[in-house]
Length: 344
View (tube, helix red, strand yellow):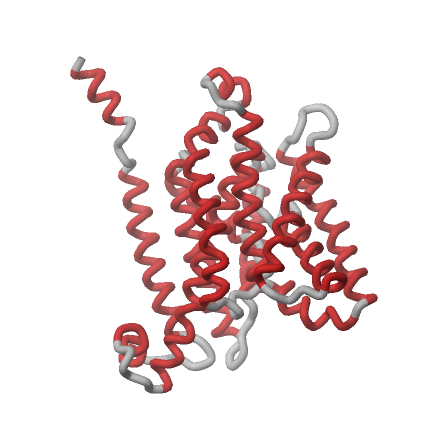
């Protein structure tokens, strides 16, 4: 009885490796937050940073600059966390180690619906962008999965990536066709299309919160079953998992998080890919730990990218979508070469 009890208790022990990575990630997040508050077109000193964060009665220029950066930083953390979780869910559902909203064409689908809304419906608010982006992201995900499922073998990792690339190219052409015929849309859309957290404010954060919470809950509730799905559909079914319902639920959570982020910040690519892949290398494939750590690492990656964009583009800024693409593209090539398109 004692041996059995010890064995059962071990199943609930948190791995030491996870605790170490969690502590390291929290330290990096703290440093990234401070850097986001301090660096930009105007670099503030430590005393101004403390005044801006903890002394509301102080109204120096540096303190006010810090306060203006708080909403942007919080918004950046939320976007990074959402993209990290979305990447983890999509990689698990497709059993593809390089699945990412940008690679599977989901971002492009959201962008197409947004530009259609701007062109034909004259929309211009974040709350209106969200529903169009979600519709575009979900329809694109269905199309990509449907195309990738055609033929023998079903939706293999290679077929999904190729379907995503082809769909993304086709939708990008439609986006350009619409903008060319409506030049008035160009200025409004081009800033959104690059991907930036610079427009993040407290109104955007309030809109974001309920969608983010729903996505997180879906991810956490589906994590144990997704671990079983990694063993294969037959094994998962033998363990009592309804694979169809599971895939639909997890995919909905991933697309929801990706679509909302794309609506509010533009199509920011590679964050989900980088965050999840790094975490899998560090702590292993258990999604009960990968999902929360992907959220944390996604926030860190996007914060660092945003700070780098501000410093590199000073006195202006280089949009974060450009920075993540610059970092993510070569890493994607390395991951692809190493993984050789193997399923998870």
